[in-house]
Length: 440
Image (tube, rainbow, N blue to C red; front, side, top):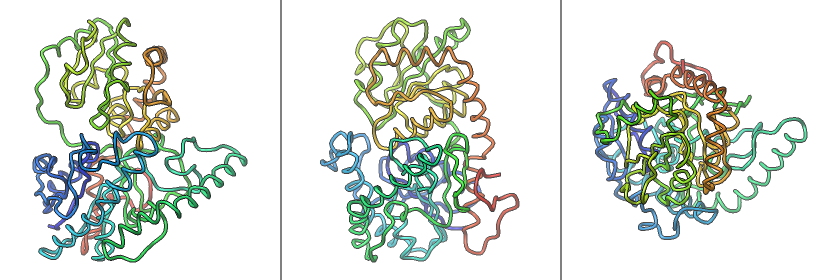
């Protein structure tokens, strides 16, 4: 049995995959200590892990970042995104490292496993000389010489001119990173007692093992994928029993009558319903569909009066809802998109903040849905996109194809097998992949 720390930023979209990893490791008999914010203590305890609180790191509530980090504001736009990086991601890193170093001093640790944006784990791993692994909770952010820079609003180029464009873009991004990102990273490193480094965000990813959610076909191909990167499908815990709203039978009735079911979700981080939920409701109000909305925890009353063909709840279990869904309209959280594709559900994505534009581009590129190229679509735009998806059965077929590949990639069990190869003194399990790509 190994003693393993599994670290997660206290964001709902990060906690989901990291609890799956923690559960898989505890199921194999390991002593797992979950390092995350107080809001998500019980989620990890339910996965069988013990809890290590954020103490030196500034804890926060992901539903109201501005309460703890006022410069973040609503998190939108370039200013909000940069403030999120500086104050939340990098700003808490040194405190995370201090917490982890203190814990390792109390009781030795064999392995560190981290949400790739919990940067303090990289600092602690470097200081302690421990093996550590990154789990990509967003689309794989690792730079490639064959792709545009991560986060840049462009699809992979074709032909010599396109490749020249991408080389130029990477040069520009490197120059900007050297002036903007590297100084922020090095302030975090200095606060943790480490010397300066270069390489921007890539320097904070493990070079021992990266577990990438997704599969080839849903992510861009790259010939320079390092051998320490493995696609492992979708990371999700086994569903637990959840009460269903009284209107739930309406969903099955709609399917029985041949009425398409459209699921609309805005996740849990972006809470301005005028961005997507309300335009989608307005756009689909007179369509021959049943619209099923989730508010991410907010009261349903915050949506106002609902049309006759709309049902809403704070949360709904995706394992129950998605098999009955024909189209999912979303702001592009990677976990929700992977859940939809695994269930064979095509998508309409309206994403504008953080990694969501990257997700939206992959959805369109892979053929599993439509990218609306905005985070605030009009009602008519949502309506036309849903009509287009329903009229094109090949989009749903492509979602089913990639969904089967996501399932076959192994998920949390494949992740645990790969992680065990890093534990000192353990040998590679039979069947654990030694080359990059999909875990076997």
